[in-house]
Image 1: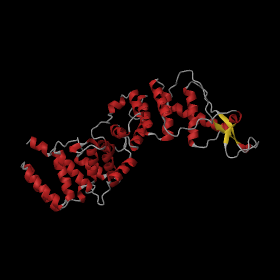
Image 2: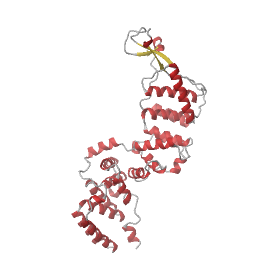
Image 3: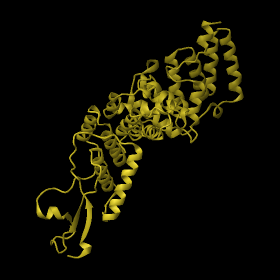
Image 4: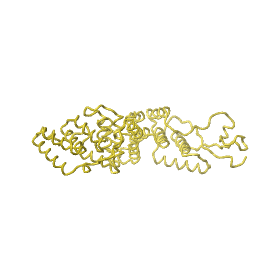
Length: 402
């Protein structure tokens, strides 16, 4: 047999535990990986892909967790059919497979399945936290699955991440937020990670009623049930840009040709004069005359009219008219109104029929319409126009407290 016909491939060790599971630190994990690399180099074990190497490292680490103080990279010599060992070119098999029937070593995880999730859940329920952590890390590294990533950072928090400086937790929270997990967006804000105002505004729009809010105190006192819940979260807890784009196309909602990310793009001196007159009537509590001026403003400048009237009716708590003008503004290209309209449809505010699909569509259009500085989102924050977040300095407050 020629030497070039043989390579060494890692296979599962099948090490049997004594029934106890070790919890391992990140320092121990790093040392175990160094030991693994030394053995791979010493025995000249080869891998066809990163996934194959990760599977072997996972098996190596699991040996230590299961009680083996001297874990080994188990390997076999693999021959190429078509060499002196066989007459069938192009397929690789191990030397053990040449002598007995049976399938090849277990393939690396390519996607999450129910069996894997059930196994992780059993580890969590039975207190095998180190094993659960390693399996979650393996899944996250190989598939990028966000539900497992959320479960992983919650587990890390449960296992001692209360210092507030755990960079691994912060890393996974931010990645989960970027992958559309709404609860993680709120948690970015709570934990002071990255641009907190940006993520706080997004979570307010995608969860205007605060159903998915995860406050800091809760996170510091997280439980096993919270970790398991992450594995079963419904799609409604996530924003999926690809799906939202499809919904926008299906509903015929498009990015307007002209876009306005703040009021300076559509206001002029004449508008300011009319606005001053309207405010004068409001100060006199003459709402009818003020509305007539706002209507005149809208007839001369529909875009600014919709924007100004949305502010007025929001502060007056006339939310049906508020929603009506937000919709007008969104269709006229006001990016701030696109975000608000998404929140309105998400919670069925102002008499609007609740529709997660329409909400996602408008959120997608808003993100496509905004600039790199998120100016439209910033304008929304400045005017505090989100549903369920009321302006205390609005006209209703003035009328009630002269």
